[in-house]
Image 1 (tube, chains in turn red, brown):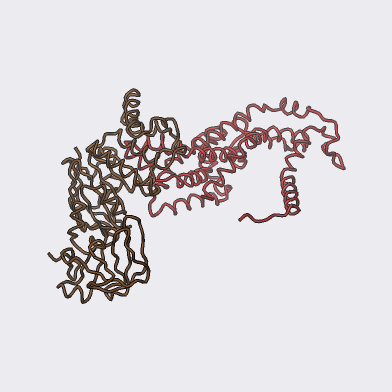
Image 2 (cartoon, rainbow over the protein chains, first blue to last red):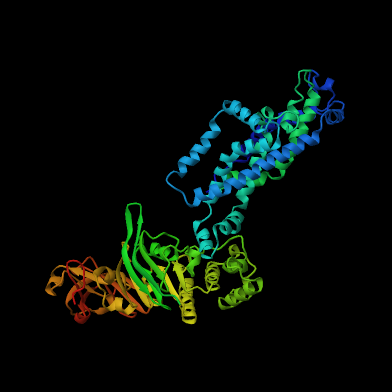
Length: 276
Length: 334
C-alpha cells in the first residue's frame, strides 16, 4: 500500500526540495549572472542580483584573449577519447568478471576500486617524470591515457553491474547458435547492455571533462582543456570576477547542456539494477 | 543422424561429484526424457551434452565422433532453454535467423529458412515483433524455431514448458511431440514433471543424485520399476509404498501398489480404513484412506461417480498380481 501523504505535507516537501535544489544550483546561477556584469557590478556591495547593466563584453574579451575553441576541442578529445578507450578495455574485462567469474573476481573488483582511494597527488611525481621521459607531457594522448586509467575502475564496475543483470542463458543460447566469443559480445551482449553502456559513457565523459588535477598538472599551453582555460583566469594579475565567470560559464556550458538532455538516462543508469 | 553416447561421463564442481561416472546411449531419432527430482543432475547432464559445462572425466560421442572437448557451437546440437533465452533486442525474424547468420548463410537462404520454420510454428504474422511483444507460448515457439532452422542432429530441451500455464503446457507438449514425429530428429528433454516424461518419451531416464536409476520405455518403468525410487517417482498419483507386516507376509521389505490397482468397497475387503481427503476430477476420484494401519495414507483411484465421502469407512483390496515387491535395498524382487 502506498504511504498516505497529506496535501500539506506534500507542499512542505516540495518547497524543501526546491530550496535544496536552488541552494545547490545557486553558485552556477551566480557565475552565469556575474558573467554578464561589468567588473564594477561584479564586485558591487550590496550584490546586484538582476538589475545591472547586462553586457556581453566579458565573453568578447575572453574569446579575444584566449582561444576558447582550442581548449574546447582539447576537452572533447580528452574526455571522449579517454572514455571510449576505457569502454573498449572495460567491456571484455567486465564480461569475463560477470560471466566467467573466478574465486578472486570480487577481490580484483575491490582492488580496482581501492586505487580510486589513493590520493592522486601521491603518484603525481612518478607520473610526471614518466611523462617527461615518454614525451607525453602537454599532449592530448598523454591525458587520454591518464584519465582513462583513472576512470577505468569506475567504468569496469558500472559495466560489470549492468552485465550481471543480463541472464547468462541468453549468452549460452548465442553460444549454442554458433556465435564466437567476438560475435557473442558484439551482437548479443553489447546491444542488450546499450542503456548501461550509454550511462557509463555519459558519467565518464562528465568525470573526465571536470577532471582538474591531472589536466592542470600535466599540461601547459598546447593540450590544456577547459579546466586549464578557467584556471588561466585566476592569474597573479588579480581576479577579474566577471571575466573569470564568463570563462567558467563557457567551460561548463557544454557539459551542462549535455547533462540536461541526458539526465533521464543518467538517473536510470545510476539506479539500474537497484530494484528488480 | 543424432546418436549420442555417454561413456563414464563424470562431473565435479570442486570436490562435489554431482554426476558419478555415467553411461548412456541415445539412439538416432529417439525422444529421450531425463526426469528426476530437483537437483538430481538432469539439467547438468543436458548441459554436459550441449557443451555448456565441461566434462570432468569420461567421453561424449556424437555420431561416433568424440565431442568431449568440442565447443557447443560445433556439436551440431540445438538447445531450447527454460527461460526461452531469446535475444530481446532482435525481432522474431532476427532471433530465428541468428544461428544462420552465424553460420554465414546468404540473406536469401536465411529468409527462406526462417519463413519455412515460421510457417511450421504458426509464427508467420509475428516475424517483425520483438520477443517482449509476444505471449509465453509464442516466445517458446520462437525459441523452438531458432533451434529448428539449424537442422541440428539433436534437439536439447531444458524444462521448456515450466514457465507456461497449465493449459498452454498441454498444448505445447503435443506440438513438441508432433514436431518430433515430423522431423524424426533425436530429442533430449529434461523435466521434473513425470506426466510430461510419460506422455512424450520413447525412452525415459530416471535420475537421482546424478545416478541413473532406470532407463526404459514409459510403460516399462510403470510396470516394472527397478527399485522403489522409480516406483514412487513414475505414475500419478504416486504408488503406495507399504512396509511392515503386509510386506513381510509377501517376503519383501517394501511392497508397492498403484492407486489404480486397489479395489474399494463399502462392505468387505482386505484392509479397513476411513476416507480422508477425496479429490474429484470428474473422470476419476482419488481417495486418501487413513487408519488402515499400513501407512500414513493409502491413495486409491476410483471412477468418477463413486458415492463415497469424507469420513466413510471403506474396505480396500489390492490386486495381488499387481503388487511390486522390493528388498531391503529398495531393489525389485523378481
